[in-house]
Length: 283
Ligand code: CAA
Ligand code: NAD
Image 1 (cartoon, helix red, strand yellow):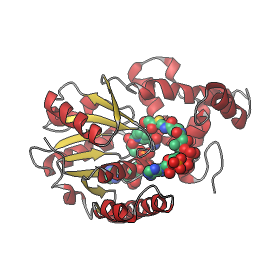
Image 2 (cartoon, rainbow, N blue to C red):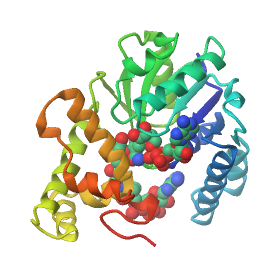
Image 3 (cartoon, rainbow, N blue to C red):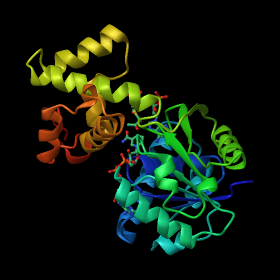
């Protein structure tokens, strides 16, 4: 099945990046958020990103206009009804995601596919909130989606071969590389990444070193583009904690227990870059 029209629900850092990737590949995209204002803000931020790419000489003005012309803001979830594929990138909370998928299931045409960009939550469980579990799949983009090469594809228990093939073809159209994971909490990338970030939090909590030295140690010592605490601030400490909680609860092993320091920062509203403070302060 060809995907000509996509809905992206959640216009935060991931949703807006996914919308950009899709629009640059020629797909018509509509972005919905918790309010029409938030959806419009996401589209405005995307326009600014595209303008920067033109300034840098990475996109022509004509291509910017064409890409921007393919991205619209939804006034309500109902505006997404015409999509061939709806991908969800809202808060990492199973109950909130299930409520959304139930609504989307009632809204979209029978042929339409549903995908989640969840970092850790069971695709099978999310699919069970709909009556189209065979048309449901995990499509996990990496942050920032326009720059990162990988999309992790997760098949739920009931995902059909046709749905899998359609989404694999779409990822190829986006110019991305895919890996396919079983539907086990955290999938491949976050099963490995979140324990690394959590361990860096434990190290900081124990006073092993300063945040800067922990980050520089990993960045230069292991040749990572960012140290783990900088990366956690970039992902969002709220999202890191939600993922760590899913790994701990669902895999049932105490080695995944979130560091108290991570919980404390999230309780303080220190979510990282998006709130101006996490392990570091941002202007
Ligand atoms: N569209 C297209 N290109 C963009 C862009 C966009 N929206 N935003 C940035 N770019 C381009 C820039 O133009 C720049 O290109 P040039 O180098 O050719 O000029 C390039 O991307 C890098 O951008 P910056 O110069 O702004 O920044 P940087 O060099 O410091 O790199 C980074 C930033 C790519 C984020 C890099 O630090 C990095 O790779 N960090 C690690 C990211 C990572 O690990 N992501 C995965 C997180 S885990 C996850 O996502 C899963 C989960 O569920 C939590
Ligand atoms: P974010 O906080 O930047 O954005 C979330 C957006 O969803 C916000 O705009 C919010 O207003 C909106 N939203 C929340 N509840 C909603 C609802 N019920 N209906 C409509 N919109 C709603 O979060 P993010 O970092 O973009 O993460 C979104 C999803 O992507 C999460 O599931 C996260 O685990 C996953 N993810 C995040 C990263 C990352 O590095 N941040 C990477 C890959 C996947």
